[in-house]
Length: 191
Image (tube, rainbow, N blue to C red; front, side):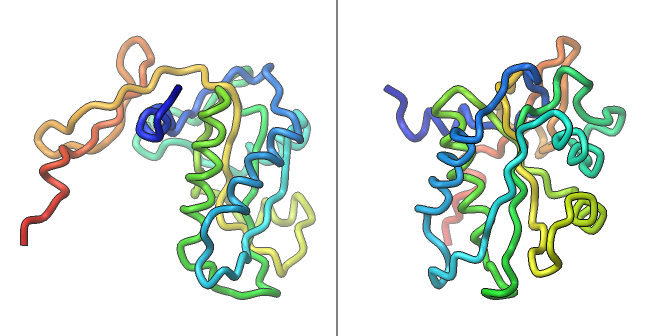
């Protein structure tokens, strides 16, 4: 049985997937339900989701995303390694213009749920929001916050401690994705 810490350690920002492994609408709805049940600032619950799990719609979304800012020579996953699903997180401005910190809480719940069932994901904040909104005919009162890529991970992600404060993730010669994390004693303040 996995502990919460095991799930958190396994829940990484995966950027390469087995594209031919589908993720059902029912599974995506279950992941959204985890976000729905999570805390919400003022309990306003302004965040809503657009589900995508067809190759045509996924391709349309993919064109409006930028992947892995630290990997300057990589333009994102190649065909065959792209996510088999996306969740587009939007704020319903008819409820409120302010969603406070809800996007992080919801995204973490979704990704932990995905990890628990053998999937993985990546929160993508670098989105051509207006172009994607137009391409998908999203009404103007829904504002795109971020996109969560979901699929069966095709890469190994290794957590390691930072060396000399270097936090940039990188890929090694075998294609493994390394994610440096600051040591615990560096992030706990004794004031």
